[in-house]
Image (cartoon, rainbow, N blue to C red; front, side):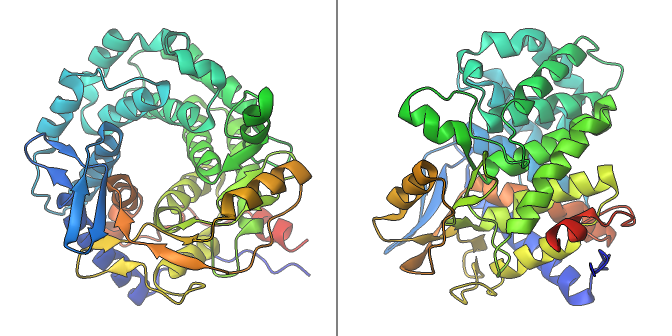
Length: 396
């Protein structure tokens, strides 16, 4: 008999842990900011001489701003001038070369500066953006998802502004649908010619699953397309079914068989950031409760994992990037899994922790949990759990 899906309320210690982690990573994120260029770095890496800040990233800056804005909106103090950072992004957009980054910019402006949306629309001709960016024809799932998320947030933020973007949103939805297999799993891209196309045309990373879940949930809400949320639910059910024994969200999946192709690396940001973000958004739209799987993933970060290692580092206010297989065979194992259509069953051999962190990782954490932490709400679902489909499918 299937155990009914239960709604968990936040225990006091869990809420306190989330609040503490928010404060900590906000400080860590500020340390990644380059005050001269007014952008966030590409990564912060631990070396023998200490932490080393490397490069800059416009993409990571956008995601960091999404998180910091939500953190500030929740009542926290942020020692950075967020509007001036946004201005740096907008005043020179030569860095923007794909529709995914354009989607992030629309998403950011929708939440931070909706008064600039008409300007962005005029500058980039959003109605024809899918045709204007050459890479769009490859149908990269993550980029299409970011673009659809941006259009959905624009509609939610300013319902009567830019009505001509409805057709663009529908077209993006249709393109994204083509990458989804019958088990709900998304491939990395639509292209399937040649060996690379064979690999990436059926294999999808975890990012290729959760960003569509979020995008489809928001698109469903913004444009009243319930079928989009149903598609997202198919993906979420499969991911929850395949979640590892320590709450791991695995790295590579097969869009044809719906199985795990490659387990490692397991990314901290997937555990504390984008998986909860996507499942929360879908839970709100479908009245489903994903709390048990979100909590299990969070516990992995806190040390309930295969290495018994706490991924948080209090001395640096960072969360280390991932647990990975350090042996040379890891890529070959994934390739064989695709070619032989077999599931990855590798044990915990040669595992290690990568001690670096990137701004987008902490940005997604703040974006996901800031408001709930301050409001004292259950971070997994804003509505009562009235659907048992998740548990019923997993226990079949």
